[in-house]
Image 1 (cartoon, one colour):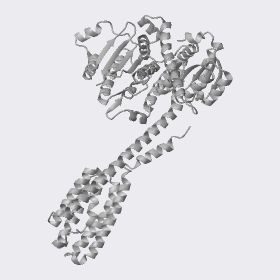
Image 2: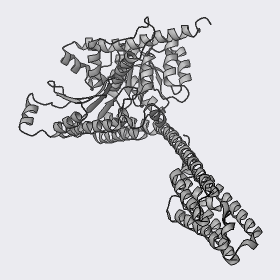
Image 3: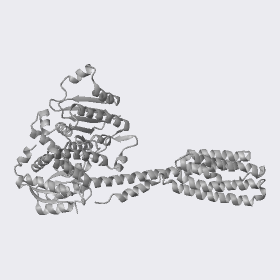
Image 4: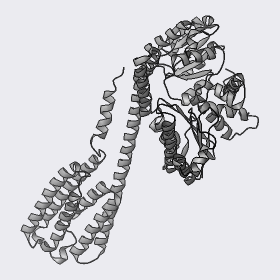
Length: 383
Length: 229
């Protein structure tokens, strides 16, 4: 047997960091912040004589340095956890920006103290929550720039636009990489599931089927074991699914479901589910409603015929509609009894099935040919 | 169902059987059951290529094939076996659910299909019927075949001279009842037909599908210029 474990480990590794795709973005932000801080510091040194309160400038630069260090450490680790960090980021940046007003003369305000460092929270918000959040942060910072200068001029507008563009670009990249990661994970999961299914199929299912077969032949207690093995076999087969997730997601548009997959959960050792080879695509809600009706019909079989009574479920795709039939081999319903029960107000399960089908614009036909069990035929039109 | 075990079908001793299954325990169990019922098991192999070699050497009348094989796809194995021995009867015995590969196996010429969860008695019954040339259908296979005919009917066709196989109303009716799990006896009773007639209807649906498959294959070969080579 091939060992299933090393591939599983690889899949888990992909999944390990909750948002692995963010890591390179946070690294890029760290590089940006450090470079921007260096630029601001160099510029501040060059303009040292312009400052009215040099001590305040030093304090501001210190805060910027500390925050550059701390945010670079905290963002990648606290990803998706709390909004405290982004808000603190925005507040500290706004604070450093507003500080400019108190350390420079009114005619020196074209270049602020933190310089391009102010783009930090815009990028962080965009990575964390997408374009819109990034734009919101950009708007706040842009507005603060104008407040600092005390006027709306071309420099300010230009700054704001650049911040907005940054937010949109980074937000877009973040979304693209998150989508790419989701897709990669889906593919890896599907492939792994398929591989496990093959492995289980080659070994466990075969042995369970064999135990069931031999057990039934031997009779007595062994037959009971065989029956249990049979139940587990069909449960396991249903669990691993014989269809691949990849092929299923190709053929159906969003919001739709393959009725075969939805109904396959009813398959057990005693319930046979027969379907066409091609996907039977219905709107998700219709498929769920139909599945609920099928569940009610099967409950009815269990209640009236027996808990281990065999039942058959047939799915037919007629193009303009779908027909699902539930049949059992029980004693059937005496002629007229159904109508009589309805008249007496005891309509129970048939009402729930009929109600659901009527809501879907469909019909139900219940028939009970003499000695051949009961058939519940549910027909749903495609709209 | 014990009557099947006590009364070996006529001609069982003359029926040479090839077993193709990659699971050794299953191979043994199937071989034992067949031997006990009087069949002559000429070879039991675990791989597709070995099956093709064994078929050429042992010339079986019937092959019991699992679709899940380690080297070659089961459907390809069936095609290969029938290319070597056109008169071979093939029964697919598979643990896999009823899906495209089962349909492909039947279109390729398999005469019947049974799930491994079937009992030994059901299995021997299926073998006897396959050996006699009768189609062996499960409810699942019937639904697949019904779906395939509907698909063929719904697929738009370009050329007028391209015949699309169609089921008669009766055939559709019978196939639907098989798909709902009724036995041939129950179907005969409900439609007031003989057991044999029901069997024939089922057989015809399979024949039409296999014929269509061969026609398609020939057309493909001609269209792609493979015939000249």
